Length: 435
Image 1 (spheres, rainbow, N blue to C red):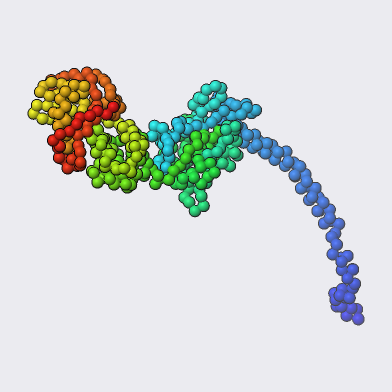
Image 2: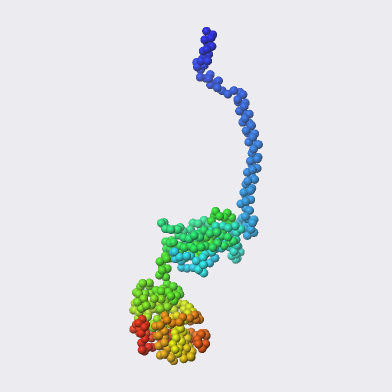
C-alpha cells in the first residue's frame, strides 16, 4: 500500500485546491533581492551619465551658435545693431523702357537688359554695396497699386501678398530663363524676360516688376525688395499697328497718324505708289495738292494737319542725292528738298533760286521722276525742321568747293492730274513756297 501511495503522489497535485497552486508560483526572496539590486545599479548608471550628456549637448549648441553668427563679423558693413532696421535694399539700376507689350523683351531706358543692384540706404545717399557671398534673386510681378503712396516702407509679408500670378489656364505671367539670378559683388544682370499676358485684368490695370531674395539662399538681416514704377502691359497685336514717334524714312506709310493699316487712306496711297514715309514726304514737298487729292475728301483739314505734322518729325539722316546735268549739279535731301545747286559753275543758295524759277522747276521735276537713279552720297545731317525756313553755314563738296552761306528748303507744286505717277512732265508749272 505504501508503494501504491508513492506512485500516486505526483498525481495527487491535481486534487489540491487552485489557491495552493498560486502560492507556489510567487517569486522567492532571493529573486526579489536580485531585482532590487539591478534597479539600483541602473539608477546609479544614469546619474553618472547625466553630467557627461549635458556637457556634450552644451558644446554642440555653442558651436552651432558661433557658426550662425560668424558672418556678422566678417564684414564691417554687416555689423548692424540688433535694434536698428536693415538699410540694405535691392534696386533696379534704371527705369523700364515703355510701352511694354506681351512677347517683347523687357529692357531699360537704354534698351539694355535689366540689372539689379544691392545698395545701402543708410544716411542721405544711396551707396552700392556687396555681400561676402553670392545670394539668389527672384524676379516677380506685382500689382500696380502696391505699395500705396502713403506707405513706402513695406514688409516682406506685404510684398509677398501682392505678387501677381498668372490667370487660370494661362502660362506663367513672366517668361524667360533668367527669372532667378545670382547676385555677386552687389550686381545681378537679368537676361531676356517677357510678359505673356496683358495687365487689363487686374484692378489697377498696371503691373510692377519686383525682385526679392530667395529665402533659402540667405539667412542674414533683411534685404528690402526692389520695385519698379507701375506700367501698362499691352497685347503684342497692338504693337503691330503702333505708330512710330518719330517715324523713320523707310517706315510704311500707315505708321503715320490718321493713316490706318489696310484702311482707305493706306489703300489710296498704295495705289499711287506711295508706300513709305519717305514717299509721302517727297510728294508733300513736290506737290502737296496732288497728295491731298490722292487722300480724298475723307481726310479733313484737321486730320491732314495731324498727319503732315507727324511726318515732318521724321529724322532725315545725313544722306544726300545728287542730280547731274551737263551744266548743273543739284543736291537734294531725302525728301526732295534742294540743299545746294551749282549751275554753269556758279553756286546758288535757296534764296537765289527763285530768279531761275522755270529752269530749276524743270530740273526738280526730272529729279523727282528719276529719283531711283540719282547718285547717293553721305552729306551733312541737317537739323532744319521740314518745310520751314532756316539758315546755317555749311561747305558742300563740289567741283568748285563753293560755300553756301544760307538756304531755304522749298516746297514745289509742279505736278497735276497724275503726272507724278506717270512720269510725264507738264509744260507749265508754278513754283511755290510752303513756310
